[in-house]
Every structure is written in structure tokens, then in C-alpha cells.
Length: 327
Length: 309
Image (cartoon, rainbow over the protein chains, first blue to last red):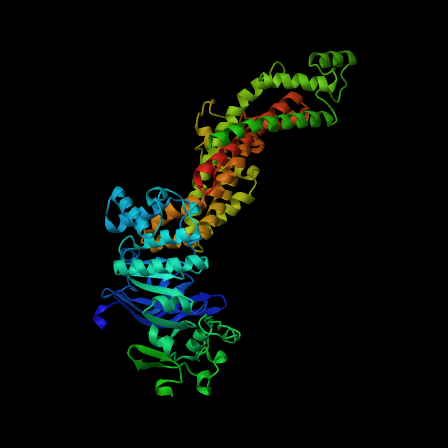
């Protein structure tokens, strides 16, 4: 099982030093990504899911942020101690990223061709002409009509959904092994969201790219992901295969999340469930389970100690005092 | 684009017309006149003078006569500088101010952008603090202090440069150095602060993060992805700054004894030298209008989101 793991994140920590105190945006996150797998990272705003992935690419703005510990093992090598030159060989080439807001993620002053060609020339060593042909081919794959004309246009001449297609084409243009999609549909219309997710799904399968899909929507995850990491306050609280987590969520937070998904197949006239309270402020977080103030099954121990990771077998883990040795 | 350019060029005609009309009547409304002296001029002589310069005619008639002259590019005779036409006066002094101004602004832009980039990339480090301190000094120290201090150090103590004069004098191009250094200081400081601020803003933008995520080298990220967007505000500033700087700095021209347009500008106002004032106004507006026009066209070229119809 472990030999087809292509990315191993071990105890990754990313802290931000702010005026208000130390913000532990990511505090000991671990997960594995297998070849061709789609992994969903789910959590509320501020749970650290985006920072986790910026940290993998070493794109955290420093200062104020820094990677405070952990390992990111890709291709047998740890990315964290790499220098700028080495990590640049990985970025955009082996691991590429698409971001939340396609309206601002493309450079408004440069033609699409310029932005795509520079990446391909850099990583694939093609000349400009061949790189442009490759770029056109990628745009076609990404469902852009008349790509040979549109490639010379500027980003503002594209709609939001089309720009995200361009971002996807650009991210996949160097045949990366991993695609990190950071809330790729949050800024888009609902009708476009499904198309973009379908596109990511289809292209990643065709090209054999593993995908890390960051989202706050369990509905998105359910349709696409093989495995899921649920994050809360900078840590992974539950991990496992998508089927198992949906069938039998363990952590009270995951239970709450699943209950909050609106469903059309159930005939009920009840109000949609929502988890009470607010996500915690992760600045100067005390050493407790950060979810206990909102948890309906909280016990005394939750208020004083962070729960250890309980291994439930079959790749399923959960951090909650209700399970494992703490029980 | 061509249609935009033609339309903009045509629109300068009514603008200039309004400026000329307003200035013409406003100047005449000011008390005094070109021949008002402490010592009274005998009435017969005054009458002759007024007649010679057509000032005995009713104001509207004078106005239309002036408009007609302007259309033939004749700005009339000066009332104060004997035997010189306004065309002569501006023709000899304006090129001097233009040369000085263009050099000062070129140096200011180059150094300002350079310092702005360094400051932005070394944000909150000593290089940034040092550069921004210089910039604050540049904005706050008046030119009549900077000029004499430079003169004292480089001309009198070190004896490297001539104290005053202009290119035509014996010292030649060496005369240019100190006036340019002095005149470029405020725009340099302003450009440095402005470019630093906008570079810092752009560096944090999403599309720069994308560029880094693609694995581009940092210098490519800066030159290709950051600078183009970040320097647009500088281009905007250059338009009016150009008009201001080439129409002469009275202070710098006085300190370094430069035969530029600034001196004439001020003296004509004191002398109520109507035709010279009008000439100054026309030159200044023409430069301001064309500078802004060039900035607009540049904007269209630099920012693809702007389209002119």
C-alpha cells in the first residue's frame, strides 16, 4: 500500500507571528497522497486547509509566516529543507496549484499565451513555438472553444469559469504528478461549479494526476474524492475513505458537518442543521480540544487535553476522546 | 485607438479656447496695467503707448484681435522687454527650461523607480528605512536650501562644478549637474515612495502568488509580473509632473542663474506684461494637455483592460 504513496505530509506546522500573538494556522497535520488518488481536505474558513497546501509548496509569505516543523516528502525527498532553486523545480512542474479566485489569479497585464508559455518553456524545455502549441492543446483539453484564437487574449476577456479553465490548463500543462486545487469553485456560479469539478476530475484521471481538493463543501467532496481529511483549527480531526466517513462519521465535528449538508432526497421540512457556535480563534489556542465548546458530546477531559490520534484501522484515524485509548 | 487620438487632439481646441478667453479677461480685471508706474507717465505719452499696443480699443475688440494673432501663431510684442516679441522671449527661454526639466525628470524617474524597487523588496529592512528617509528629506527640504548647499559643497569647497550658468557658457555641460540634482529631488522622492507602495501591494496579489506557484524565478516574477502593474501609477504622475517641471522652476533658475522660462513667468505677472502672461499660459496649457494626452495613450498600451473607442 505505501509504495504508491507519492506525497507524505508528516506533522506539518505553519505558524504566523502576528501582533496579537502566535497564530498556529497549521499545527501538526499529517496525511498521505497516493498515485492517482483524489484527496479532499475539508474544513471551515480558517481551519488551516489553504495554509497547509501553501506550506507544501513553500509559498507561505515569510515573514510573518514560517514553517515551524514537519516534513513534506515527495519523490523520496523532503521539500521543507530545500532551497529556492530546488523547490522551483517542483513548483508548477511536479506539483501545481490552482486557486480560489480565477478573477485575480491570472496576471491582467499579460496575454494568456505569455502566462502559459513561460511555464512550459521553463519546465519542459520546449521552444516558444512548441510551447504555444502545447498550451493550445491544453486549453482545448480544458474545454476552451477556439483556443488558437483565445490564447492571445487577456484574462479580462474571459468569464470567471473560463478563467478557471485556463488556470487548470496552465496547472496541468507540465504533466504534474500532483494538482492542488484550493477551493477552485468557491468564487464561481453554482452552474459553473459542477462543470469545473467535472473537468478537474476528468483531466486528472486521464493524465493520472493525483489531486488534493481543498473545499469547505462536503457535497463537492462526496462526488469526487477517494479519501477525506477533515480539518479543524489547524489540525486533522478525522481521516479516512470518503465512503466510510459519509457512512459512519466518527468525530462529532464531522457528524455535524454531514448533518449540515442540504439534501434533496429526504422529504423533511425541518430547518437545516448547523453546528452551534463559531470556529475558534487559533491565536494563542489553549491546549485542549478546540472543538469542545461547540461539541454536544464534550467531556471534562476535552477541556484540558488535546486528544491523541486514534487509529481505527484501514487508514481511518480520528482525534477525539470518544475513541481509542482515551475512551 | 486612432479614433481616440484624433478625438482627443480635436478636443484640445475648445479647451485651449476656454483657457485663453478666461485668462485674457482675468488678467485685465487685475488692478494696474503694464504702464502703471510709481512715477506717473505724462498723459500724452500714455495715450501714445496705449495706441501703439491697441489698448485704447474696447476690450472685446482687443480680445478678438488677440485671438486672430494667436491663430497665426503670433503672441504679440512684450510690453516690458523692449523690441522683443513674446515668441522671441519664449523661444529663447523655453528650450532651456525644457532641457533642464526633461533631464531632471528622467533622472528622477530612473532613480525613483530603482529606489522604490529596492525598498519594496527589502521591506522593513535597513535598506528600506534608509531609502525612505532620503525620500522624506527630498520631499521636505525646500529647493532654496538644497541648491545653495550643493553649490557650497561641490562648487566652493570641492571645486568640482561651476556655481552657475548654462550649457552655452564656458563651463558647458558641467553647469547642468547641480540644477538637475536639485530639481529632480522632489519628483524623485515622490516616485520612490509611490513605486515602493504599489510594488508592495502588487507583490501580495493573487496573480503574483500564481507566478511563484508556477516555479518562476524571483527576478522573473518581479520584472515580468510585478513591475508592469506596479508602475502604472508612476506613469500617471509623470504627466502633470512633466508639465510642472519643464515650465521652469523659478527657485532653481534663480539660484543657478539659468536663463529659463520661470523667471519670465514670475516677472511678467508682476509687470502686468499682458502678452507675456498670455504666452506663458498658452505654453503651460499646451504642455499640460499634451502630457496628459501622452499618459492616456501610454495607459492604453500598458494596461490591456483599458480600451479606447
